[in-house]
Image (cartoon, rainbow, N blue to C red; front, side, top):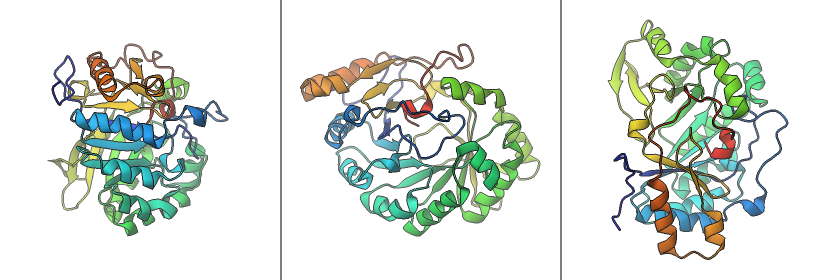
Length: 327
């Protein structure tokens, strides 16, 4: 068996986004509905041993990048211990984390020592009232988490801002300035119709090509790149260290270069964010599958990876919420 995961469209799969929990301590309006409680039962979660086994197989198949996601991944107990185990796996060269930062004051230093190299922090507003309306949380907790991440030595720290027309689009220039001052990277993201909440947020869809043109009226933008396995297209603000990434799954989809799959907390391998193609690994693991059979199951699944999502054509197709898939 070739030591690489290549799908039928010639794309090399080298990046796994690993959800360690579907629970979250915030309720972002495009992710989880208020009052939602239908989370996976803990006995359905993959154990650390099961996660390590699956990721070892992925490493043997050429996957080098792993991102810890949720829900809010820092709600999973002893996450730093899992991070250290994954970082030691042969082939895994890049371990990163997506978080809302509320738990970082207690965990940032532990995660850095465990081998997490980079973090992305979700932050859609710098206005406390609007932040609370969007997430149900408190802005000061996120800012404290960002400060802890800086003190722990994380670099780069990327801010993920979902840009929503009529909601927070008037704050984009403020976020640019904030990231310049704090030496953060800014990534602007288009809304996606994931589940009922995502489709509701899609009513506030904002084409980031328009946003880029607006930013260019105030700043000189130069083409740039950033380390990482994601789909952002970067520019640098001239005269500063700020890089701005544009993640455009709707206006300029990047399916032809997709290099990733998502592993949910219950062991479901989702082959495409915008399709329902999947492989359920937990039943295989708990039925005693051997490593060769596990590896073959993954290879066979990658052969079914769709060519592209259909967010525009079939916005109601994906019923699961983002937190159920993994960020």
